[in-house]
Image (tube, rainbow, N blue to C red; front, side):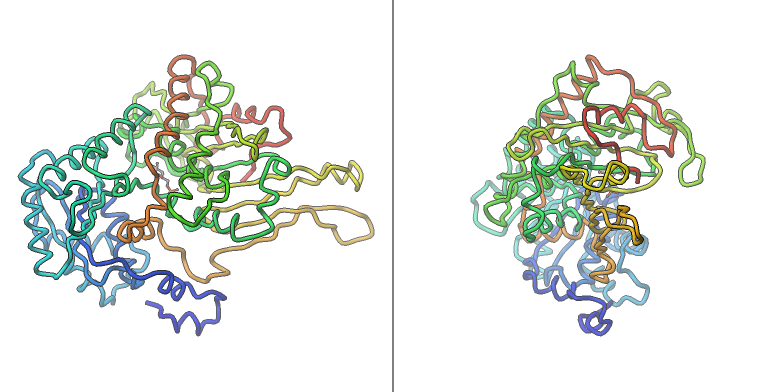
Amino acid sequence: MPTIQDFEATGKTEVNPLREGLTRRKNPDPCSIVLFGASGDLTRRKLLPALYNLGRDGLLPSKLAIVGFARRPKSDEEFREEMLEAVRDNARLYDESDPLWDEFARSIFYHAAAFEELEGFGSLSERLERLERELGLPANRLFYLATAPNQFSTIVKALGKVGLVPPPGTAGGWRRVVVEKPFGRDLASARALNRELREVLDENQIFRIDHYLGKETVQNLLALRFANGIFEPLWNQKYVDHVQITAAESLGIEGRGGYYEQAGALRDMVQNHMLQVLSLVAMEPPVANEANAIRDEKVKVLRAIRRIRPEEVDRFVVRGQYGPGLVLGERVPGYREEVGVLPDSRTETFVALRLAIESWRWAGVPFLLRSGKRLPKRVTEVCIQFRTPPLHLFGEDTASSVAPNALVINVQPDEGVSLRFGAKVPGPDLQVRQVKMEFRYGTSFGTPTPEAYERLLLDAMAGDPTLFTRSDEVEAAWTLVTDILNGWERFGKDPYQYPAGTWGPQEADRLFEGTAGSWRRL
Ligand code: BG6
């Protein structure tokens, strides 16, 4: 594990990320984390590895108990073995000779019980009290719902009934609940879930995860905009022509046919991740760097997006579905041939939208969003495309080869920011060509960025909800998305087919009608 001195010795970095990380704030107070859905994929692929990485970075509380909760009977030892494998396969900081593992494993426990049976929660309560006594932990408890969404409210109700979450205001340690996605499947179900959670919990005890908010580059949107003087004056309808947000994946549905058939790209990516990114791009400066101040501004953006009427849906939204094709040199089946997918499925694996934000800042600036599976490559980026100069000073020939300035925030995989502008080609003629000025995280900071779940787990333990979605944000996003779902149901054309390995159906190009732009070729 690199130390602070190692970083300083390499001379690679201007900013020492370890020191920054360590001095940024104190480690969270000792607590217990209960992982509901402990035998699931998320626990194995993301949660345990993230906790372990936090341990390696010295960011965990000084004392911690991690209790896996799932139906299958197994001993603490067996669960530890499984988790070691999970960490070995998935933790970015794992190495064989790691002395931390034994210490970390001693804080892992397992509790076998069914979500539907109250006794299992009663015995969990006793188990936690015992662990707290033995390990000298305060009764600070984080309950993480990494289960199927239809279990969320059952679990929270049970937590309330057995007193694991006492009524808000009761003295004692803190109690918080992290809720995984999807949070509802339309506006009505999201509202119902919010209501059910609020019967047991205060809003400030509920941490709704959107892992995009845990990504460094997404958080950097705030730094880019509000820690610099040069961008914000340009960040409005006077200078911005349009904004494009792309979340492209080369992967297909990865064996999740059952889930994806019920979801589709709009619910899976747009309702949560893409609208969250959009709200950070478009929000007004918050009055303070504080959770509610930031979320107040984000929700205002979501509310200012013009709602799409059902009969307008095909004008502003284009959906697609991949057929068989070639992705990264490999032949892949079409969506309808995937396991768990109906042969005549109408579920969209690609969606593109044109949104309008009706605010003083953004009036008349189209926001174009696209997301899809089985596209040619994995890339997530935000592009702010600026207006062209008011006058063609260098003659039509040159001017037509000059693309407008663009500021691109690369969310993944090449995390960074680049600015495209025109420069004179050396030589006797005045020829202008596009060049790029680039910032890359890897080069400037010399260290891989932490996984989103590391930051989010740390914040949940520390009680900082800034990077979690508030109930009003979730409902505002569902309002927009439910309009589209209703439109599709009543008026929508079937999804256009696109061959896997292409950039989605060509029909998505017409969303640019009336603008000078087009989808970026990535
Ligand atoms: C998840 C979706 O929320 O986000 C997946 O359910 C998608 O379908 C994933 O693949 C994308 O996340 P990332 O971090 O790989 O961009």
